Amino acid sequence: MQDFPEIFNQLFHYLDTHRLPFIKGIGYSQQKEEYYWEGMNRQDTHYILQYTLSGKGFLDVGRKRYCQEQDSFFLVPVPSHHSYYKQSEDEWEFIYIEFSKEIGTFLLNSIEPLVTLPSDNSLKKLLLHFIKRQLSQEDLPIFENAKIAYELVLEVMKCSMDARRRERPEFIEEVYQYLVDDFASDIYLDELAKYFHVSKYKIIREFDRYYGESPMAFLKRYRIFQSLILLRNNPELAINQVAERVGFSTSNYFAKVFKKEMGESPSEYRSSKT
Image (cartoon, rainbow, N blue to C red):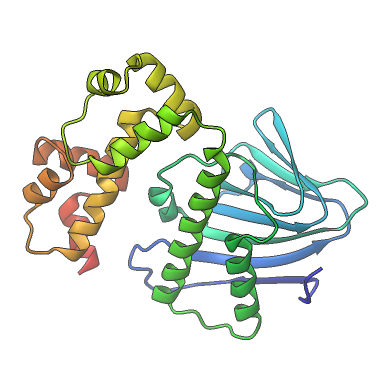
């Protein structure tokens, strides 16, 4: 057990979040009694990361049940069809983080419902450090909050990918790396199939199995992610130049995909960041 109060939680409120992904709340709990949360009963849209430090709980996603034990975590959107709860007599000790809905844009790879890590992992160290810090102070400026949110989500993605890498076929790893390295080039499924000597249907099936989306859907979202960096950091680039640099054939198509993904046009996004 950690040397923390039995129950600790803290919420963060800001007049202006600058549309940044940020942490809405944090908490630590030692649950001794029965405990139950239902994902569809919570109406505010956000993401929940919960990390088990000791004890045992359960996570239901759809019709599948997962046992949450020491050094396992989950990250789920709210509202969604999931529930997590404690039934055993053991205490259940965990940390949770509530992220704003904007963090979903940066979750480029699907994350397994439950991920188990080695006991000495960097995600746990980050979470414990954050909790200890907030136990002694209440103030957390929005930009510092967003920086911590980015760091935690990147670590979640890295840990999740490391855990899954042992299971993925080598050629799927190579397809993923090919898409990341050459995202700005013209890439087509037939080209991938020819390059990797595998049918395009197998590429689609296996990529979706291990990454949660088709290779072309991943490529499209990765290009949008790269465009965010250019729009924020390179104001001298016109929208059509940004589109070209991240691999879109026309600025009109880029704008259409961008608005569908981000809920605003590239120009509106750029204006909000300057």
